[in-house]
Image (cartoon, rainbow, N blue to C red):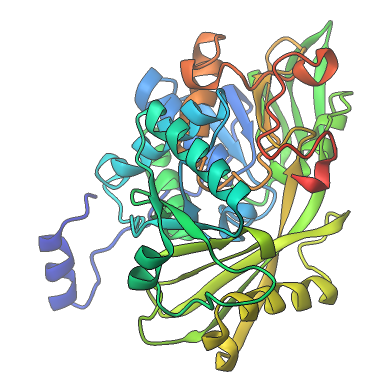
Length: 417
């Protein structure tokens, strides 16, 4: 079933009785060519690109809960490609290009809105750093504009420009950045993968990984044993736990990142705005809610909820940046379990066990990376070679020290990334 304006009109006039289920509720088979653990954005996009680009359709995606119930539905929906270091820069540039054609590719409205992102700076040194980053973005082939205070005041007049502690000196704008609807991204990839023959298996928790003579043979699940020639671990904040089933100890810490949304308001914020000194970022959803977040809860946890001191910190930062939001009522908050790596950059690589592949360490970059990650992971599984845009995402860089990509310059401390 293809979506179109004509189809929407027809269904609206006939009681919406002709819609079909978006994907098949598959029953697990005993054997697959590829099994993907994790039914979030990265796992579903990997399955989709395996089927659409490489014709590999004897694939199962195993999700212990429901599709899209993890981090892909627990974020602030920001899409951008404003990374600085080689390795990260070309990957996120590649991912943004995939975002720009995603709705046509999937025939699904993921509500991708290129409203632009403004990253504020608050000192001469930060202005210089923003200029260097902007030049790196342009060298990569992406867009970047350095904004003066006067230009900012015309675009976003509601910021507090005269705050004593962090006066605003300007901003770095990427117009092609923006947001997308997180649930719709998961649903679109699920629909596309299922249509091409991939089995999407919900409520199927992996309880063990079968390895014989250094090679993956399959998995044990709550719905029985499943054999597989190749196995991909794509489980975000649960990466360390699942990899431990294969005898691996990953250089990953899991931390909670909280996010918040207010009641619906009239349109007032046209861009994504990032306040680096207060570690606060905000945008407005299509339903009118202000969606915002801040820093990690600074302790390791697998709980999808946060603590009150970080709530207070985020609210303080928001009020410092734009006091106008003070009367907005916060409707709800949630927490995503972030897989934080020592250099703040991800891993897409062989796991050192024949037939086992690893996708983890996305830190703050998970949602914006969904198309690029799936494309690169599918390429790795299908060809056993790294995708050209993801050659730097090697696992062994943490053992050798070669090729580390410390994007924020904060050293090998997971929770600082």
